[in-house]
Length: 342
Ligand code: SAH
Image 1 (tube, rainbow, N blue to C red):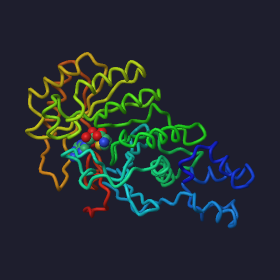
Image 2 (cartoon, protein in one colour; image 1 turned 90 degrees about the vertical axis):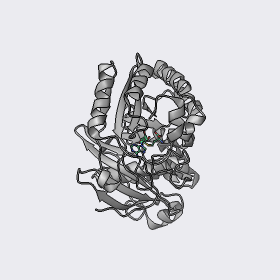
Image 3 (cartoon, rainbow, N blue to C red; image 1 turned 180 degrees about the horizontal axis):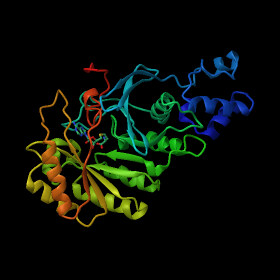
Image 4 (cartoon, protein in one colour; image 1 turned 120 degrees about the vertical axis):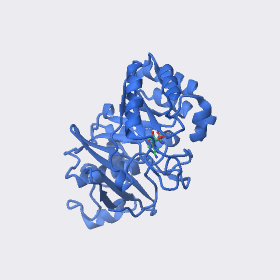
C-alpha cells in the first residue's frame, strides 16, 4: 500500500510504473491530505486506474463524541477489519491515540483490547492512515498539520509489531510528511524487554512509557501474563539503559485496581522501586470494561496514592479520564463497534 512508503519510495514507485516524476509529489500530497482516490482532482482517470490497487482505501466508518469533547474514530481497512483511535484536545493542541494492532495477544486482565486475542498486525501505512484521516477531519492536510502529538496507547502492543511501528514513527516524523516531532510521540508497552533494546538502537527521541501496574512480579503476573516472561528488574535495567542512551525521561503507567495494587504497601514498594530514577508516574484509576470484574479504586484514593508518592519524592499525577462515556478511555478500546449510550 502506498501509505507504507516514504516520499522517496513513492517517487521510485512512480518511476517504476512509467509515470513522470511530478506525479509522485501529487500522489504523496493526496495520501497525506487523507484524500480518497476519487477525490484527487489533478490526476486522470487512466492514471487512477493504474495506481488504484496500491492506493490506500481505509476510511472513517464512524465517529463518537464524548461529553468532554473527546472523539473516538472507528477506522475501517480494506479487509474489513476495524480499529479505534481517540482524539483529545489539550491546551497545546490535539493528541491522537492510535491503535497498532487489530486486537492484542498480551492478555492483560483489565483491558478490553485483548478480549478476543490478536486478529492481525497493522502495517505502518495503516497506522499512519489513522493520523491522516483524523488530521483531515480537523481541516488539516499535508501542509496543515492539526495533530501535534501521538500516543501509541490504543489497541495492540506496539513492540509486538516492532517493524511496522518503527516504520510508522519514521513516516509520521519525516520532514516531507506530517513532520510530527518525535518528542511529541509516546510509545506505551507492557514491557517486552528485548524489543525495548531494539528500540533503543533506533535512537529515536520518542517518550517510552511502561505499563507497570504492580511493584512486585507475582502481583504483576496476576494481572499481566507478560510478567511471567520478563521480571520488573529486567524492565528497569532496559529503562535505565534507554534513559542513558536517549536522555528521555521514562513514564510509568500505574492503573489502580481496588484491592489488588492500591494499598499503602503497594505505594511504598512502588516508591522504593522508582526512587532516584528520573521518571514520571501516571496514576490511572481503572476504567471499567464490562466483561471484566476488576474494580476501580476511587478517584479520591487515587489522588491520595499519588500524593503519597510525591511525599516520597517522586513525580506523579493522576491522569484525567477522557472519553469514558464513549468507551474511548484507556483499556476500553476494542476491535468491534460496540453500541454506547451516545
Ligand atoms: N499495549 C500497550 C499500549 C496499550 S494500553 C501497553 O500495555 O502499554 C495503554 C494504557 O492503558 C496501558 O498502560 C494499559 O495498561 C492501560 N489500560 C488498559 N486497560 C485499562 C483499563 N481498563 N483502565 C485503565 N487503564 C487501562
